[in-house]
Length: 442
Ligand code: GDP
Ligand code: IMO
Ligand code: MG
Image (cartoon, rainbow, N blue to C red; front, side):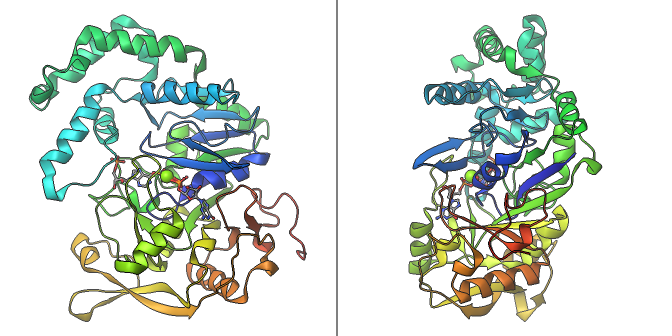
């Protein structure tokens, strides 16, 4: 003990990388528990930018144990490239451990992801095309290939043959692709095995050892709760569970090992890919917000859709994650608005009103946000470090959100840099809270 889970409370890209890096200051271990390299977590330190896809956002803290848990799907090519890049930039990667039970993204998963999207045409999900869905599908079908299989040529080959068998028809368009040749694929993956071998471990046991000896363990989520395959805007979701409960499954710990759950949310909302987005903006306002917030995907470079903060959705994700704290990011991007809007209910077909997040796909697709307007602020907030530095209207905005959602805001991010943060009074006394009580805190 203790364990802290950090999750995305919207549609991903909320700033989980930055928040994890901040909380990792005092953590002994950081564990990724789901998703794969569909994630792109950005950390900005001393004007240097780090983009991590698979490696936990604790890696920049020398000596912090970094774990890729069993719930993650690992593309070993992406992982070895990411390790090379970190090494090149002189980051110590010796503390990385990879679960022997994590599933591997294979070349055919990438092909199937591409083909699946092409087949859907106009109805496509807008996946990152990183093979995530097909890999989790094979895991569920018990045809998956795991990290431990990289270390045994015979088993690896046998499993590839078994996994390819039911896919023959869908892979027919790729029949001549050299990446599908059994020998080539086996050799390529055995090479990854050699490179990664010294990092492969029983990570569940490792995390238990950390918790049992009183170390602080962070569980770093990828994506966001509204992309959850069970609780999100299905079918426009990812193929894993980005909610806090998945930290238990994807790292091998129990619910009692979790002490705090931090939900990361932007001061507005964004979404990449298709699917319902009740508070979406278009036109000049959307362009301005996208430009100011740099809302282009870390992984795919796609322009993110943008909108006002959706408190109906946020209250829902607070509940399904049992959030104990909110980390609100990108407050700086809202500076300069005369009025800021918060969505407090949805309006559906024929004037129906919804105060709770609708479970029904058709309702959700027709839902549009209904808003309260609050005063905006013109001041630049990027230099604010204490709550009292923030303009009164910004503080009012934060208070409105915390009260509506019913979760205290413990941290406000006012820029991409690591120092651009306001720890609030609410964080005092929390395990993941301010290292020192902010000025004025009791
Ligand atoms: P993640 O996937 O949740 O880790 O988020 P991403 O890294 O994909 O996207 C968040 C982006 O916002 C990154 O480029 C961050 O550097 C940046 N960022 C994080 N916090 C802030 C903030 O408070 N203000 C601004 N302007 N940018 C931020
Ligand atoms: P981070 O961790 C934002 C979205 C994709 C698509 C849907 C399914 O950086 O917040 P997938 O490739 O997972 O099958 O795509 O999920 N998506 C993300 N959106 N941030 C992410 O990760 C995402 N990972 C997947 O755009 O709509
Ligand atoms: Mg991201």
